[in-house]
Image (spheres, rainbow, N blue to C red):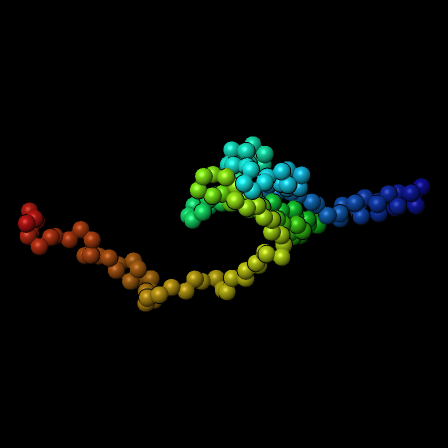
Length: 149
């Protein structure tokens, strides 16, 4: 009886350490992605097939981005990206699809910030200068006196 209890406790402990898998963003279905064809589809048909994009370009040529990622983590540990893909659908001036491409983890850039301060141009100001620096600068009397020119 004690052996059975010990084995069941060990099984429960190992089951508690399994990885947690989460899908985030666009659910990438390869069959649906293959149905989007350059020169045939337009914005409306792409939206009907894939749904609204995660992001749309604001400048330059019209581009829709569908971003999906799958993370995995062990309990009490930061999540790590296991799979990541960006589906890019570009449109021409008439609204027809001009190209469709998928990029994966090989295109991801991991950035490491350098310190906790952002360098800026200009001079360093102290606390008191920040606090009292604008006294007399804003709302002063104009060149013609209180009544103005």
